[in-house]
Length: 199
Picture 1 (tube, rainbow, N blue to C red):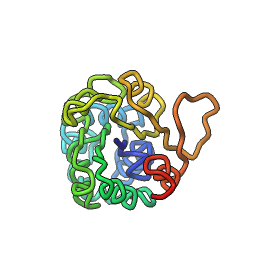
Picture 2 (cartoon, rainbow, N blue to C red; picture 1 turned 180 degrees about the vertical axis):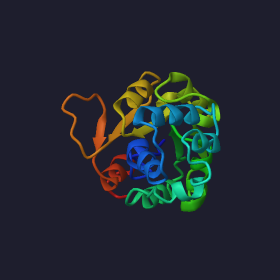
Picture 3 (cartoon, helix red, strand yellow; picture 1 turned 90 degrees about the vertical axis):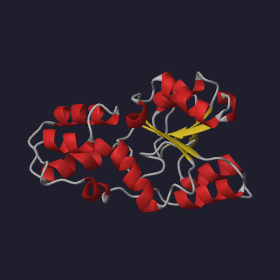
């Protein structure tokens, strides 16, 4: 099970690194806290992406399609997903994200065929690390937590997953001296951890 931002896609903090600069370029004058508040509501499904653009004062200037052009896949993630598929390992995505943007990115990068199961916070009204969102995924997969490996770039999300019996891998190039999770610093290393050295 993979997180989207920071694992499947390159930018882990998409609000700071992508959304805020995009809105600034469109003339948005909200402070970063205001933008964060709008994103949080949108990622919980409380408002639509169009509501977000309008509330940010850029409704006629911004578009989901243009904004999503700023997202890039992590290096070698497609190769990893193909290897998982070839081994018969069911890939899933559990992510805090906006419904409209998640769908556009899946289509743009052709991920639907490689990741059959998606649980997106805006679709279910719950964000990680709230335990209920993990249970939504387990129910979709019809399996116990012990059958799942979660790869995420946020320790808080991994801590919550571990309470449900999931194996956890922290995906980050930054070393954490005090961390209870296995760590992968590259997609190549993650592939070895998930599939073995012969992958």
